[in-house]
Length: 164
Image 1 (cartoon, rainbow, N blue to C red):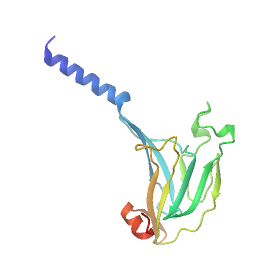
Image 2 (cartoon, helix red, strand yellow):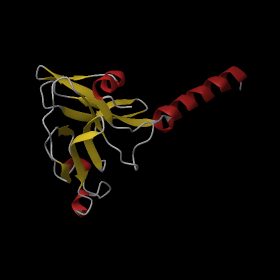
Image 3 (spheres, one colour):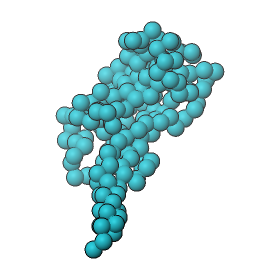
Image 4 (cartoon, rainbow, N blue to C red):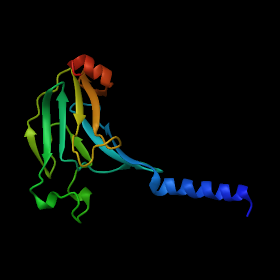
């Protein structure tokens, strides 16, 4: 077999392997409502699969402004029905969307929602060690202006909250 053909076949096999399983997978959150209060959806990305809707299954979600937590929900881990790895499909027990101040099934509110103030920076986040690493960090900076929610940069968040 000619060397050029071997290299071409090897490159094709490597590309196929990366597309099927070698590419890193990740999740990303995005705002799905521009009207206050904010709502978020989550997507799964892997190889050629881009923007596939998935569910929120991490143990903690919160909204903070600087060092102040203004809303937090935690997984009801003591409830066997809320095990993310149980056989029942995740979408039957975990939300595909989180809305500020609303507590979905399988979660418990640990910090009651405070009113979101106009012009203040906020961060939607999770700190679940089982999932968070460079590809699965859940987080988004946002603010409310004139009753509308808009994404902001980390720099703008720091400017409005004094956070480091």
